[in-house]
Amino acid sequence: MEEEISDKDHKNDDDIEVASLNEVIVKSTAEKMEIDNSRDAHDGEKISSVSISPNGTYAVTYCGEDNSIEGWIIEDSKLVLNSKSPFKLSDSFYILTEKSIKIKVNNSKIVCCYTRDNYSELLGYDDKDIKIEVYQMASELRLVKLNPPIKFWPDSYEWPIFNFKKNNDLIIFQSNILSVYSQNNKINGDLILKLSSRLSGRIIGVTIDVDNDNIWAISDNYLFKWDLETLELKFSYSLGFTVIYNIDMKDKDLTIISKANLTIKYYNEIVIFSKDVHYPIRKIQTEISNIKVKLLYDSQNYYLLVFNMPKKDEKQNIFLYHPSDINKKPVDISKIFKEDNSNNNFILYEYNSESKVAIGLVNGRFSCINYRRVKNRQ
Image (tube, rainbow, N blue to C red; front, side, top):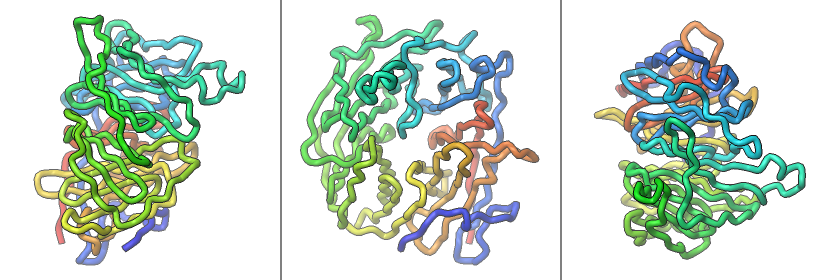
């Protein structure tokens, strides 16, 4: 069964629901979090990118206008700025925000991001001067070294994938090489190489599962799962179809959700498998390639939260999909994330399943929502 996400799926009713009885009816409670207004974040400039830590207690924002980073503590439904002023980066480079990974932060306030030399584009080098940089958010912004340093291969067809585990280890995947760096306070707080391994096969997409300490990868026909602690292959899984490699993609970002059924998001396709059978039970074809898929759940129900990252003047669509019942149509929940009685729409960037916190931007200003519950009835 194949479906498409498009504007025609949007509902005009105030209550988010689908009419027929055999489809899901969703009710939700969303509470906007109080934001620290003791000073203007980023000196009042618009924010370019946001990221939330694995446990949902810390966030970072980046502003391209003044090339600065801010840290935020998330606690008791409040967003509190974690420094007296923004951390200004060097004028010689800036952080890339157009990539799917953009910027990541761990629970210890360590930030990882792509940076580009300001002069590289003028000199015609393009991707040649792009690096991965790591910073510690403290009283001052401190550059964290990788020991040994990782060599960045300026391949225009491939971008490194990076993420943090819940134990704060940094994982970097590039050119089929998986590297795990661990913080060692005895050596000036640098990140020390803990494990490294070359993965075999033609890897098309990769994701780092921080919740379950796994790394997932897909080749043309197979899905692979490795243990992040040992880097041992746990299993390979026949997809039952051939993944089409898109040469225009400059990253290998992949999403895997393995609760109950197995959900795979690659490029603009979402495929859901039953764990008991090796063929798709549902395919979701999206019209926009820059999408994210997150798990949204409470004690009784769980759904796939699917949303696109809109470009300038583009509309954001936010849908819930049932992960197993193919007879239940997607539900448009975009209105839940909009501010009441306002034309300023909340643009969702990240959703943390553990803390049930959604972070995003409203007209370039940081905003955060507690998404408390989703109820399902027939």
